[in-house]
Image 1 (cartoon, rainbow, N blue to C red):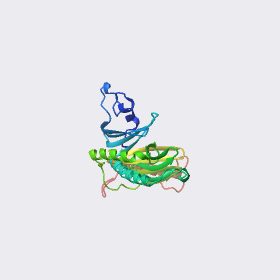
Image 2: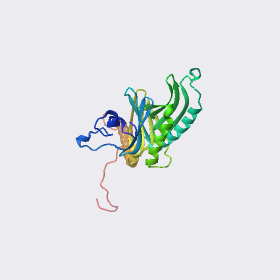
Image 3: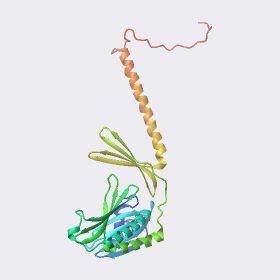
Amino acid sequence: MSDIGSGDEGISSQKYHGQGMDAGGNNFDSGQQPQEQELATKMLQIQSKRFYLDVKQNRRGRFIKVAEIGADGRRSQIFLAMSTAAEFRDHLSTFSDFYSSLGPPNPDNVPDDGKLKSEMMLKDNRRYYLDLKENSRGRFLRVSQTITRGGPRSQVALPAQGMIEFRDALTDLLDDFGTDDGGFKGELPEGRHLRVDNKNFYFDIGQNNRGIYMKVSEVKSNFRTAITVPEKCWTRFRDILADYCDKMNRAHSDSADHHQGAAVAGPSGVPRAGSAQPARDVEPFAAGSRI
């Protein structure tokens, strides 16, 4: 699930299936409050495909969902932060200019992977790969969204002839709702890596519409898990960890003292010959006092 979108629940909306449900997957008749609010939408028919560009808002902020509906009813979608959508719009202009400069398709002059031009966009922990490709059905722009260090991969394929129309629709939405994601504007710290025995721990700092967070990932050859710690509790998290470190250091020190004392006393508990006798507790008294 994307940090800015809420996953697949928006696919169940009325415009995709004709059912009385909102963008959050809630039934209007149930009286439940919608999890997402749809602020604006545009629909494009490009060749045999329909594309929906939805500006949505939830408790995490605003974002744009791009949904592709194929002629056979299959659907796929990607999520874009508002600033990422603006960057994507600019790339669409560049890709369109490049597409216009190409001659007619030539099956004998196509790269092995079919890629004619590629770009990459990076936003927090998400990467977007833009690939203008060519196959037997024509030329198209594939947009793939991935999440670093695991997570689902999603993609849409836009026919090359529709890139300008798509860009113009995206521009209209950005003009109405802006491109500012809000939040922290500075440079986030770089990620760190720690290896312990056969485990790898990755510490990555990211940001989404809820704020800054630290993702701690534990990775082994056949196992992966992660936790996310919001910035507002880093100090408390550190204090708890430091407290446990102090307690374990004292516990190890007490254990070492115990083993050392047992070695001096011997197996029966009787002090070994030549060993120092422990001092007895005595009642302190002042000098010159009578006994």
